[in-house]
Amino acid sequence: MKKKIIIKDHILIPEHTKLTKKETEDLLKDYNISLRQLPGISKKDPALSSFDVVAGDVIKILRKSYTDNQTVFYRVVIDE
Image 1 (tube, rainbow, N blue to C red):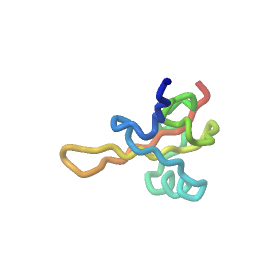
Image 2: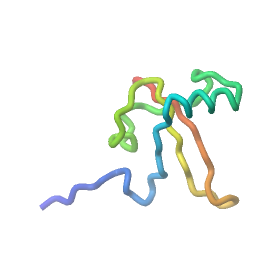
Image 3: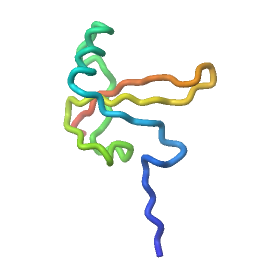
């Protein structure tokens, strides 16, 4: 019997969180940027398989860091 692997629970996949519209607006305002200035992440990315995402959604990624406990990255979902 084949064991099903849940990608988001894998040890090498950092925590991904979908931001709400309000959180996205606050992020863009705080950094004085537009969505076009954020790096993209494909909506086909396996780490996003558990989210219902559409192009334009913003994903917050928490990665472990050697110099700090966690480092935060933001990505905008793209149709690719």
